Image (cartoon, rainbow, N blue to C red; front, top):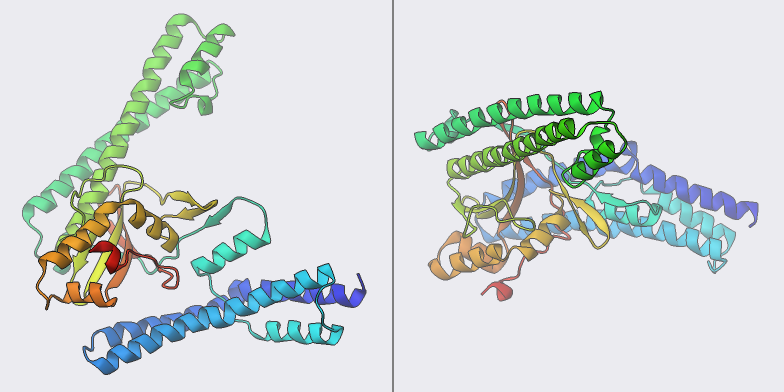
Length: 383
């Protein structure tokens, strides 16, 4: 390959790195999107046709900024490099240089979910991972002014859940310490003491003469107690997160959307609600204790809880969501703001993380949804 083409490819790659760097386009676009978000928030408070038209134009401008410009430049950049490598560019060296310079001149980028997905799928062959984009975290106070409508029973129940969680946490910590101490004493790797492997590991240790039959049986009981305590801790942590989320929904005067608020299993939403002023759907990820966001593999890519694609998938799998929307629309009068917003497509969709920490403090963090790929059930599919 001629040196001038190698130079072009180098410059194209440098351009992509600049676009995707934190000091490049990411910061610029984030600033612009914050301004757009504030504009949206202000316009939604004004209930007249002109403000709605302005809102539609604002949202359209944001989408155009992100995709009609940034995505188009990045894709053109990659195509140029590919064509040059294949010898199919069909352009002169001067034209390729000019194209590379044009791409380089556009230096605003975003860490949006779509771009993360695009980058992971084209830059390398490692397992792909798309992380959630979070907004500012705020603390929710059970005794604060925002929670004046909470019943004493709700507050008392949450305090009891925190107390029980502390007991289970301490018991599990002690059991884990004893398990690890015994395993170390007999030269057993604790990483092999998982729920699926611990019996095989103990049998192997007995066969090797590392531990006696009686001691192995004692260690088995210690391991099973640790596992039971871990399960108890997980359940009480989940209960903390769910109770904290229920309290927030109550404090916000939101109505539960799901028919059965107890989570059934994988592929189910934790909590979802309908609220007024403005009309909105809020979907919650409820976390208690030290629980972290999980992942789900969709189309060969791992999406973190909080991403738009993850939300799309859960809403598709959990039929309670569509049933709840249909039930509300069918039961509401024609003038109901939520019902009208659902039908005309102006309903706001919020996705938030609620964390109930081991010390009882509660935090709420909004996830930043990528509106261009948000795909909730359409009305004609619901009714």
